[in-house]
Amino acid sequence: MSYETILVEIEEGIATITLNRPDVLNALNDKVFNELEEAATKLAADEAVRVVIITGGEKVFAAGADISQMATSSAVEVATGGNPAQKAFINIENMPKPVIASISGFALGGGCELTLVADVRIAADNAQFGLPEIKLGIIPGAGGTQRLPRLIGIGRAKELIFSGAFIKADEALQIGLVNKVVPPDQLSAETQKMAKRFADQGAVALRLAKAAVNEGLRMDLEAGLEYEHKCFSLLFATEDQKEGMKAFMEKRPAKFQGK
Image (cartoon, rainbow, N blue to C red; front, side, top):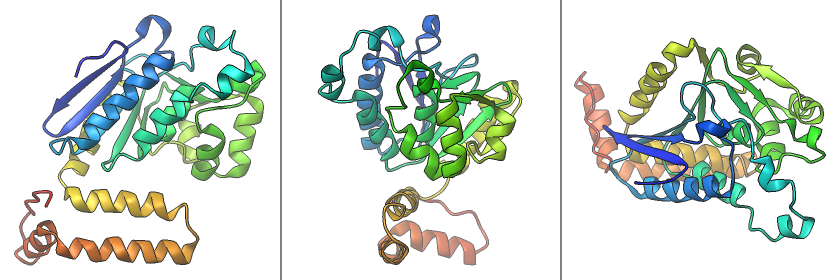
């Protein structure tokens, strides 16, 4: 896969999407969003890909949206522009396989919102997070007002959104914004370790586990439990379920085939 603003690499079932605009701290613009949406679509359909990692590289994840692109936009242009950021992020969020955000340096504005669509977030201890849009006279527009409260709670989310303040990795860990914090020189290895742990599981079970969580959050508890049971039941029609339980009883590692 060849793109202008991102790099996509696939190795041993793990795809890595790297934001690739280092000269502007990986600022996000429509071109980035369109390429992210296209890459997510292709990786979602690639049966050889078991897990997807999104990163900005060693120095910065993404320092926010490209303000130069937005500064001259009118309300009509924004309202009718199709919202490529939300389209891309929804596409990533709905991928039928685990997505890990690997975060070093700044993850601000749209960059922070991009981390929110991942299933799991691992941060280097030099990472900083924030939604500073309020300081520009606007609000987060790529899902931040909706996903952040669902992840860390309404009060903490409002505090970050209303103040535009930045928080460091240790605080992000404390409030549940990230799953793990590691030294910068260990970030890549720890991300790969987690990705491999996910990739070693049955692909169908992973897909339905993600669907059960994501779809269930959109339902009331009773409907969510019913949806979970449907997913649970469907897995008993898979070869992976037979192999997983047989391997357990035979006290050996399972060899899942994603079927």
